[in-house]
Image 1: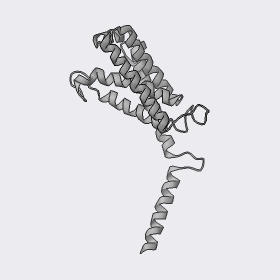
Image 2: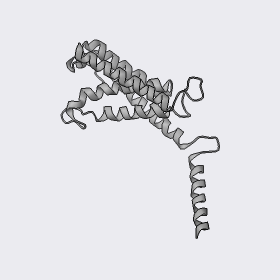
Image 3: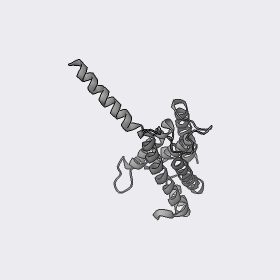
Amino acid sequence: MTAPANALEKTFSDSSANASTSANGVNASDIGLLALRVGFGGLLAAHGAQKLFGWFGGYGLEATQGAFEQMGYNPGKLFGTLAGLSELTGGLLLLLGLLTPLAAAIALGTMVNAVNATWSNGLFGGAQPGYEMALLFAIAAFTLAFTGPGRFSLDAGRPWQRQGLVWGGLAVAVALGAGVVTLILKWAL
């Protein structure tokens, strides 16, 4: 009875290894990270383009700056522009898989403020949007900070490629530091 169980275990472990890694070394994680990066990075960049240029049904820079002023981010011109630039830059870097820890820090720091700005509306919101999307974006940025961009990225195999526990931790620390400094400036100005 033991021998067939071991043979069965070997069959499943061999087939799962073959299913997750192809002959050229591409594995399922590489495909998953590519999908996460391109999807999340593209959406984040589109949000930045809405704020800065009014693309994709956005309101444009002037309206964004006014909205930031109303949310208590004074001066609205500075904070609205900074939010749009952060989303556009962080999103494009993530989409390309370039300077991934920095890109993740930019995205996560921006989402710290987005969660704060929508916190009073609750997780799912009601008449006004809640912080659900900002939290989801923050989770994606946090994840990419630690995993890195995967094989299909501009970082892959380059001398500047960084990923793992230390780099992910540094990216999160930078993001939280920048997010908290921005909130302090919001409340102080």
